[in-house]
Image 1 (spheres, rainbow, N blue to C red):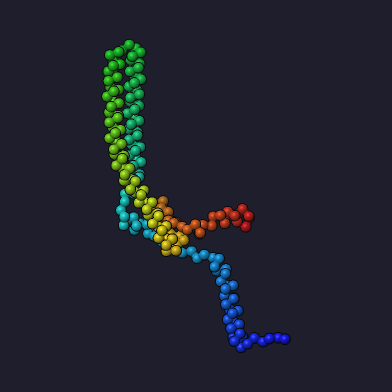
Image 2 (image 1 turned 30 degrees about the horizontal axis):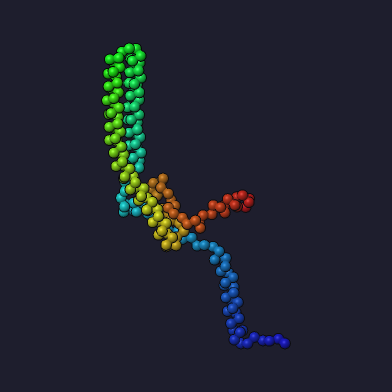
Length: 188
């Protein structure tokens, strides 16, 4: 005996099929993740929080300059010491003593010079430390805001400087590196 569906069931049957089709059709869409991209004008951010970006370069240059001066003065001391030893071996004790006093005077001068320059470097290091601290804070703030807003990628809107990064932050979910390597390895 065949049972016929009631009128109510026949009325809802097309909607049930449509619902099943919609769910089935939506599954592939669910597998794809929509990537939201944000832009950030790094120039405006840096202008809003003025920092000395050249501090690191100045610090490194100053450090190299001081080291070069100390190396030159130390080389001069070595020459004086070698000359003193030579004079002592020749028996010129008085002249060797004069060289000894000159060596002591220049050694003290180098120590004083190094202490003064170290103070300069310490001051510059504080500025560099503040810059690095700002950069770390900026990076973590970009990541926090992007994640809170649901962005997968944050691009630098204005890259006047060729050295500045275009991608400021990205979610690991948009990284396809492993898939590309796998596809290349498999010859796909």
